Amino acid sequence: MRDLDASPKVEAAQIGRIFREESGRSVATLIRIFGDIDIAEDAVQEAFAVALRKWPFDGLPPNPGGWITTTARNRAIERLRREVRGRELLSEVATLSPGNDDPGMPKEVGPVQDDRLRLIFTCCHPALSAEAQVALTLRLLCGMTTDEVARAFLVAEPTMAQRLVRAKRKIKAARIPYRVPEDHELSGRLRPVLAVVYLVYNAGLTGPGEPGLCSEAIRLARILSTLMPDEPEAAGLLALLLLTESRRALRTRPDGSLVVLGEQDRTRWDRVLIEEGQAIVRRCLRRNQPGPYQLQAAINAVHADAPTVEQTDWWQIVALYDQLLAVAPTPVVALNRAIAIGEVRGPAAALALVDDLDLDNYYPFHATRADLLRRLGRHAEAAAAYERAAAMAPTNAERDFLRLGGRASR
Amino acid sequence: MAQYLLSVHSVEGETAPAMSDEEMQQSWKRIQVLNEELRAAGAWVFGGALHEADTATVVRMSEGEVLTTDGPFAESKEHLGGFYIIETDDLDAALVWASKTTEAVGKPIEVRPFRASEA
Image (cartoon, rainbow over the protein chains, first blue to last red):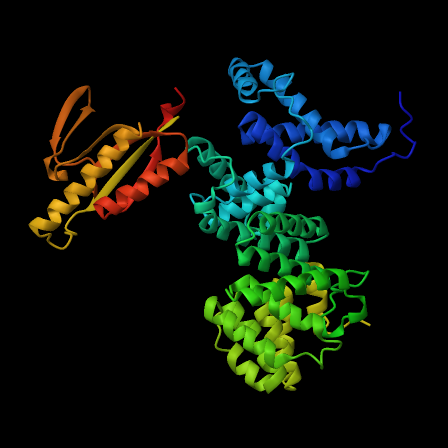
């Protein structure tokens, strides 16, 4: 018997984090080997169970990601060998993977990143609904549980489970291919992929303790912009994420409470990320094919240039929002433009614009109204708007921030 | 390889703007070209246009007897107008054929995989 009192070498929470980080890569590789999403997912889940049993006593393997892929692959092969259809599939796998000594034994080196790229293009295939695309990407590439994905979309867990099952069934039944699109189809196929990566980043930004998603999204954006150097929006998305990431650490205090842009310690913004992001924005500007991601990146680049909130070039930000509203005329863009207008023309002008927007179910709308009403001295209305925003806020940090009237707690 | 049904649906009463003889000829020609292309690519399994839905007859079992009724099965305004069955590697290839079909016939195309496609 093992000594149960001995403190484990690896905590379960750490194992969970490692699986979150690594499972996308493993699932992508296993889908390529076995040509089946469910087999890949189940096998990685089994590997997780094995890790939970072993790692606390044995310690971390030298290469946890490689361990997960190898263990999951072996589990899948063992399981398939027990089934007739599985044995057929394994012989297909063997013929499809020439050069491997053992069926289903891929070299650990090789196009690992391309596997994830294949997977994201499959997950974001236009034959799938937008909801299904995002759900699949978060589930398969980012290793989120169905429950976590459900919460990210504010839907019930069984609804999300059903959505995922249906999407996976369609991929299999309709034979949605597992490959990176060819050059001539790439630009059309890229749009939903960029939208999904952006959403994944935001899930990491606002989600409870999911910073792994942010680096995951940046990594995906980096691969996409490298693979598609002729797509300015892929570069624009990467720049936007880098510039947002440069101040992510300053967004919250150690106790989890939120720090708005104007109150952040700008000397602690990550200059390396800012410089990389701004360099991409400059290249995009020279190319002069503006799109929504490039314009949002440019707006963030202007913020990054300002040593204080007062010294921000708000007129330039308003001009960029005008352009953004022209290419992406959504009420959320209009809301952000109104906030910038508030900086140059005052809260009354901004509130007039905000009150015209149909965003009752969007909590930043109420938070913005609350802030503008407070600045106008309409305190009772501001308190009511803060309360509405707080009731809808997705995280405790944002809820607490709003309950405190949108001001720092210290 | 997988097989897909590419179906053309027409809405009852929703008549397309009347085509001139010349336009009819052109449309027919486009479809002939598409059919040739499908055959040359080895994607063709079967295809054809159907008569109006009111030419349909439905046969069903009712209390152990075969019952025959006049008219289409579904009391819907939309009916199958014609279809192709094609064989391709994957959905992307099928969607390319569907794009060519919708261009040729000027109507939306539904693409649906066959169950037995693995055989």
